[in-house]
Amino acid sequence: MTNWSPTVITRVMLGLAVVLSAFPLYWMLVIASRTNADAVAVPPAFLPGGNLGENIIAVLNNEDAHFLLGLTNSFIVASVVTVSVVIISTLAGFSFANLNFKGRNLLLVLVLLTMAVPLQQMGVVPLYRLMVSLEWTGTLTAVILPYLLNGFGVFLMTQYTRQAVPMELVEAARVDGAATLRIWWNVVLPAVRPGMAVLGINTFMLMWNDFMWPLIVLTPENPTVQIAITQLNARFSTNYTLIFAGTALSIIPLIAVFVAFGRQIVGGLMEGAVKA
Image (tube, rainbow, N blue to C red; front, side, top):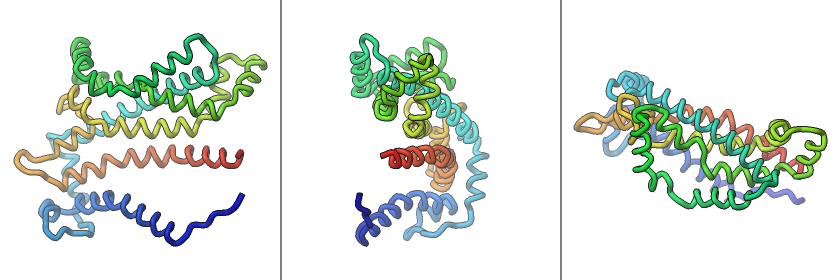
């Protein structure tokens, strides 16, 4: 195995990629810390101002946005859906990868077919009618229930389990007298933690940033954070400072989740590299 050292061009390109990726976040903080007049000024200001705290307080005290409630609702929705998707997908992935049963391949093909169809866009009308008939509109249940399982999570964990958990390891645990759930808990879960972390982060981000379905089934008085941000606008003008301040607050949980579970991803990659 040969050691590879990056060239000057590689370092420059990586540095440019980092700058381009970080600039939108920096610009968001610049606008969030200034007045609305500074946000539309030409030429624009490129340094942060001193109004960040004032704008954040204005966001939290905005009576039309219900921003704190939106943060709480989004955290509840994203957390419940993430836990459900990760657990069900890991169980299904273990079943498809390491258990032999009739119709396994057919069921996996059906799961893949659900990924090829835009169910949210095509099913929004019947799904909304279902929520109306169940009298769940305006509640978080209507936002959570349709997303408790998705085909991508099942497919991802199936492929990851096939690579991370050899059949010989499962058979050895079964010879030792372990039941199926015991094998999943003690053998499979420790091996697939990096995949679970990737799926968890991806699911949490998707649910946190979801806009269309919550906009349809929730009311302005009981919003998620994305709806609350849109309600920060004034009636006849756009208040960029409040919108950017609200956006800055809304990404804090995403950063916290990535920091918390990103270590699992890096640790799993390093462990795989050492084994290889």
